[in-house]
Length: 225
Image (cartoon, rainbow, N blue to C red; front, side, top):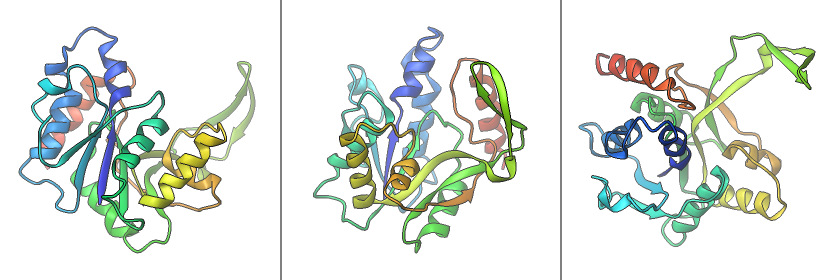
């Protein structure tokens, strides 16, 4: 199994705040912990993109479990670059788990849960959470309807699909100029039906600097589990 991590967007969002030099940035510390920790996931070979000017200075830059791929403009471009990097290494039916490293609080237990549930699934699937909020459809700042939240889940990562199926789906979307914001949507465009695996609510996404204290709190709590 392979785990591309798309972390360029996480770095861009946080670095714009000018409050964390990259050596202290929690994105890097948690990624390094994932790779070198005392309980790394034994099923995964690790893959990071993107190549940047400061990449050689990072503590895990030459780690033997890391392959480097150039990132792209959007998430789908970066993931496709990572999949192309695996050509000749990964087999068509190998599982690939794509993780957004803006989600710093992913737990080993959730990764293994996803793998165990989907291991024999013909398509694959994603970690997700059912929505607990009241959801509104909006047009031009005006509420147009209330969405039934019983049918709405929030997509998380990792997302787990077969190597060739995901690569072909992302390639097709790119060729058609279609915007896909996660890997599941690319498979959906090919008529596939990915499964949902319920994840933990602390698998939050860092989108602004004020999210960092909450992520730090969750990481501290996880250390006590």
